[in-house]
Image (cartoon, rainbow, N blue to C red):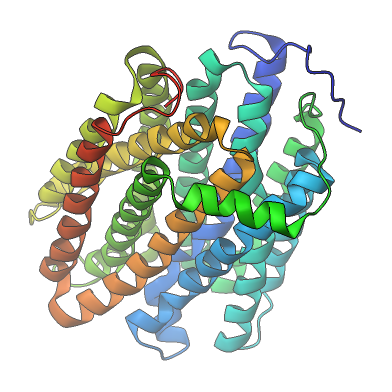
Length: 409
């Protein structure tokens, strides 16, 4: 059982406890993104095997992210009562088992149903991980810790997509789902083994009126709403680019195989480095100047993907990936800091991630529709509009007054 000794020191970078936290949540973040996004490399194959349109095949991702988003707030409520580490462990183990079950889906409809259930199971980790870090990690190391968590997301997203593409080329989509599910289970067990018990968590009874009041506070705070919107716009762009890219690179004139397209996701480690670097930089100079810079970097990468040369496309995707993960790292840590005086950090994190994963669902579907209507040029128009809106909001955040002190907001 977690202790409630408020005098217990919080984990600082360089200490053994911080390393255990970092490794455990890096593995958990990797499992979450691998299980969530590995079907992205399979969209053209699923479209062909099940005789559905590109937009319909994108539902394999969209239903999972939508279910995850809807389950985030309830998962945060459960975590406030049941405990952070219990929810994290249960979430990762159940979602990995459902990933294995997807490999046996008898139809496209059954696959969508299993993916929706997997989204609900996955919600426990992202809803609680940032709240756990906000409670257990020292404020001066929080940006780095969240950067490493987001870095785990980046590695997991890369490895899941790459592994599913390679396994699909060598076997089938069923083998791809089974392989990623097995890796997710290993990562889940690693997190369960290493994650330190909460020392600063205090269980609270389930009180619906208090929770509704807390949500109302978060939903009426301008800074948090702008950060939520930035997260949604960044994730919508990211999902749209990668969804559209799988169709573009398997089409003429490139004609790449599933495994070759999946190899494009090898740029993901750049996001792991950029998220940690942006977290450190934000701890040092503040979040206000770092967030718009990350969005500008993502926009430059998007512009490069308009080239016909495959190396330039890859370079553009790498720059967009670096900018996206840097921006998400800064925005998500900013939510944790800004919400500190407003009540439950878990609720603030859940609402941010609700917007974030809603952006993923809508961006992925928009990319499928844009590709069908105007191919890559249309996808770029959609993504450019989304990034432009995110940049405007980030500039507005620079002028948003802090809640308590500059170091907090």
